[in-house]
Structure formats: C-alpha cells, structure tokens
Image 1 (tube, rainbow, N blue to C red):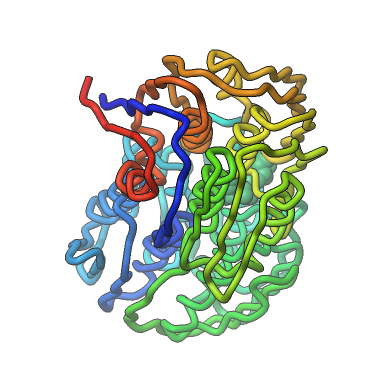
Image 2 (cartoon, rainbow, N blue to C red):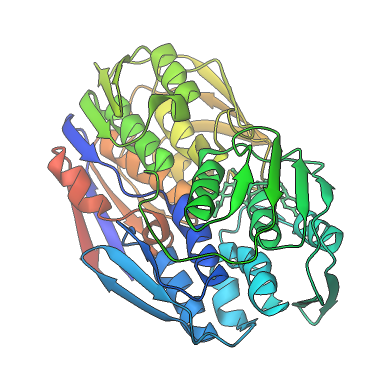
Length: 418
Ligand code: UD1
C-alpha cells in the first residue's frame, strides 16, 4: 500500500487541467450496455473506480479497451446479467447497473452495493422507482434480484432528489414503452451530462437539471463517441488547496455556474476569485477567515463531496466555522485524523464545530475515505512540517495524477511504497 509524504508550507502557483468527472463517467459506463453498438468515452480518468466499472462490464461479457485515455466499450456479446459481490462491494455506482441491465436483459442480479463507508446509503428510492416501471424485486442473502417482462413508462415521484436513483430511472426508462415523468429529480450537472449522452445515442430525454425529467421511450439506441464534463469536485479540491497554501491556483474545464456556492465560500474566506469561461482562478494570501456556516445540500447547494476539503481549509483559518452535513450520516470520519495535525474540531452528530488554529502541523494520518483523504492532503500541504498520508486506495478511486498535479503547482509531495 502506498503513502504520500508531504512537506507542507509551500505556496501553490499554476494551472490544473481537470479530469473528466468521476460521477459523470461512471453512469456512462453503465449506460454503454443500453446499445449493442460501440460506445467510446473520451478522456476517461485514470482512477480505480473507472477500472472497477470496466471490470464489471467485462464480467457481463463486454469488451472494454483503453487507449490514449479513451475507453471503447463493445457490449455486442454481453449476455450475463449478474454482477459478482466482489465488484459491487468495491463500487457503489454498480447500483446504476440495475437500470441498464433491466433495459438490456430484463433481469439483474447484484449484491448490495459498497463504496465509501460514509453512512447507511440505502437504495430504497432506486428499488421503488424500478417497481413503478414494472419490475419485480426480491432480496435474499445480500443479493437483489430484479426482473420484468417489459418495462413500462410511469409517473415517478422521488421523496428526495437522489443522484443515483435519478440516473437509474433514466437508464431503466430510456427504452421503456411509453413516457416516464420523473418529479423530484436530482439536478446535478452529471445528470444533465447523462441526459446529453443518452440523447446522443438517440434517446428522448428532456428536463435534466430541473426537478422534472421526461423520458419518451425509444425502440433502439445507437453507438456514440462522447466526452464527459470535467470534475467540479476535483476543481474544488485544487481551489481549496490553493486557498489553504496561499498563492494562485487556476482550474481549467469546469463552468463556474457548476460550483457557484463554492466560489462564494472562498470569497467569504477572503480569497480573490476570478472566473472566465471555464477557467477559475483563486488568489490567497494564506491568511484567511473561517466561513461562518457551510451546509451540504443537493445541487445547487454546497456539495457533500467537498465538505471534508472545506473543513480542512477552515481548520487553519481565523475564527470559527459550523459545518453541517445533511446528506450522509458518518461523513466526519476524517476529523480525528485532522485533529492529529492540531485541528480544533468538535463533532456532534451531523455538525462539526471548527475553531481555526494558526497553523496545522505534520503528522501520520490515514485516509479512510475518498474525500476525507483529499482533505488530509489539503491540510498537509498547508501545514508546517512533514505529513504522511497512509492508505491511498480511497484517494486513487477518484483523483487521477494527484501527486503530479500538485507537484506541477509547486507542492512537495512524494508517493512512496510501504
Ligand atoms: C452520488 C455521488 C456521490 C455524492 C452523492 C450526493 C456518484 C457515483 N456518487 O452518490 O459522490 O456524494 O451523489 O451528491 O455519483 N438515499 C436514500 N435512499 C436511496 C438513495 C439515496 O435514502 O435509495 C439517501 C442517501 O442515504 C443519502 C442521500 O439520499 O443520504 C443522497 O444520496 P444519493 O444522492 O443517492 O447519492 P449517491 O447517488 O449514492
């Protein structure tokens, strides 16, 4: 298992070209089996969640090849509707496979999904929506078996705008008979991207990015070559790092509207934020104020996937911050690691109360989940002394070339095999 060794305290200067968005690419992999024709996803990020999704498709019988950063998926010979528990446990996004397996084979057998250990993460909304489309579901011994004779369009109301459930509904309804109207849909930019991808395959989906998505079932979908949107969470991670270390960091590839609240929060910290088209530049003198309150919400609210990074920044700002996590129950597991670096943070249930300290210091910390791991890297880059971040397997799930990108900004970060 590798670790990062980070000598903190260096200012960051430069530009980061963002990877394609993890949360956009993973559903596209699932969508690729909706057609027997060839699908090419351009600029797929080199992250382990993508490798895992490719492995799932291979288990189904699809051919998946990587070349020059592009992925080609040919599922003409796919015939299997089962996903082994080893793979579903590793990757929660495998749950999207339910919708596309049902569209393709009318059957799906998957183990209960895994992913980051950040809370209960039930899938009741997914399963109830599939039932509305005519699917019967049985659960036994940690496996979910779904089957239908045909998928029928329906009116579906989501109690909560779940990202994964919204995507699953799109994947199950896109070739269903008739029209599906989904009310209470999640509005994340990655859902708009899935709509664009499906429409490029010949689907008739409209309304993504709003509360109501309408899907007119079509008979066939054709192959497509598609470049997904860039990663707004990766953008936020580098911008927070720039703020924490001082200096000037620019990200390229994400439209500012997709991270508007984050930019507002950085201005509140005392950073200067400049935006131009898909370029966002943050200037920081390294002496920042705490945000009064950050509360995670579904899009367009503050993303839960940037909560840990925001806490890491606030940990060494002046004043106090209240960080409220509304989406996942146990998403403060990284806090004890930040405390080892001198952070003064108290967690009660879904709220973290941060009292900013002058400077964090180096320590030996463990990255227990993907975004919590990114937060530790940010804290380490801004801290005094040397930090070792152990267990990079979670960080590798979502960040391609993290070490190289930070080194190009002037950080002292090494990856060492232990
Ligand atoms: C997706 C993202 C993840 C992000 C999250 C919220 C991907 C691959 N992952 O995860 O990075 O943190 O959106 O923005 O895109 N819920 C239920 N029942 C359900 C489904 C969800 O109660 O059937 C609850 C969850 O427990 C959670 C909340 O809804 O409290 C949000 O979950 P959801 O939007 O579904 O997140 P994911 O799709 O799992």
